[in-house]
Length: 373
Image (cartoon, rainbow, N blue to C red):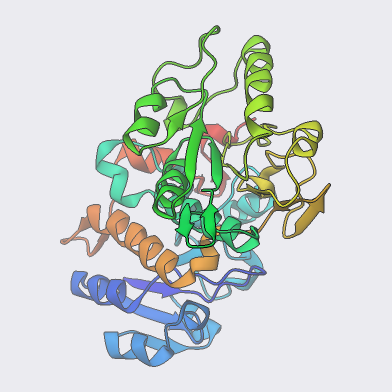
């Protein structure tokens, strides 16, 4: 069983899908590891470290030749997979809704494409969940990016020259990224508040020492949405939330938005009018900018200034912490393959619950029902 680890080709992608730690673990299972030269360079991992861990290091052609499993962070270009035979697994974050043509090409080539972001959010799959591990880092980095752009200190400071007030930070969307953003902003000394359409998150917000901001007159979503995500709300709730948030946003120094709906454009949480209501020098970080953005006026890959308010729209935020993001991502991949490793067969054998959820292509066709429309 040969596992190939590729150097990422997407612009700005600094992560890598395996580390020397996971290479050793795969070899202990009986696999042979091949790593493309330079694959870990942008994540601060030298080729020599992979070689020392037991992998062969070579060019892309040698890495892919005869590979049974190809690991990636983002889905590799099908045209670049020369030497990979039909039936091989492509295991990565494949962005199936936005990259349908690429998924079709995987099917046409006979590959079995496994989308790690489709991993079901069930207890036994928690250690395999790339969305959670990467969102955790994104929430943390969003606060650091906000602090870097904000021209003042976060904590209250009492000095002989007078007192500096603590920054006011507001987190919109309390999933994994939002919870980490709350915790990080609190650690930096900000006064933190947060909101979500899921009423169950109120206690989570309070447990981190932040103030919950919720619509009280119209029911939100009880418990968790499908797959751990919030669903879309009624027009009545959206209008009530907009009114509530408008008054609150105008008083904030930092706003971080994290709301996503799988397979759809990110919901608009902040309007241009709400941006205009904020004080000059305030900062908004839009973590959903690559899916259309939660903030009107945010631009993917840019920091724009609107009426003195900075709107931060960095792409691929987890990749901005490449070493840690790679360590977590690669462990997710190992945990996934290890959980299904059949020692007698010398390879992983998937079950229906997880296999059917993440498998996009098989036998020359697209098989995942989420891509049928």
